[in-house]
Length: 175
Image (cartoon, rainbow, N blue to C red; front, side, top):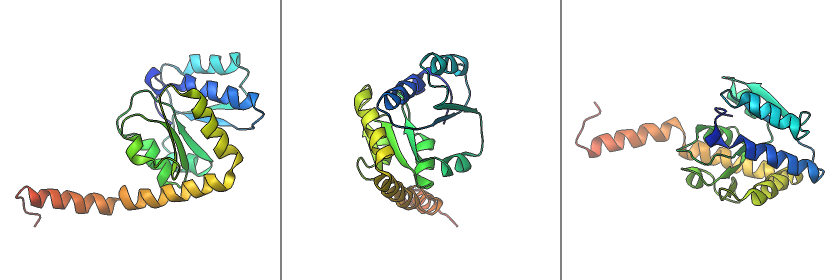
């Protein structure tokens, strides 16, 4: 889910899907978003023989519905700040496989709420995706751990408490 732009490295996701197919692992990769790479990504999926394994959904605002039907989220960006989609997936109880960009190593607890993979380590990316495809219990456990972490660390209650604490520490008054 996200903008179809080069820094998101959607090509990496397509190549991972190809390798999973080569390994005989059945999966459907859904790509939600729009942007300048949409046409070239569709062509690439066709050229790789992945048209039955890659679904281009286009732009959608109903991320919770989409995530509720997903098994896990894969985030393949090379450059990122704090990716909302990772937090949204965790809040929806989905395990995450992501490159180690931006705040991802702070959001995803490697081996507990998902897997964090070094950028450029496509072999490990595919291996972690294969693990979640073949070990459904582990995938569910990681998703549940992610949901608990999201509720504890990303919730509005925490944001409010921490914002008020920062305001008070700066000498401001909240009343």
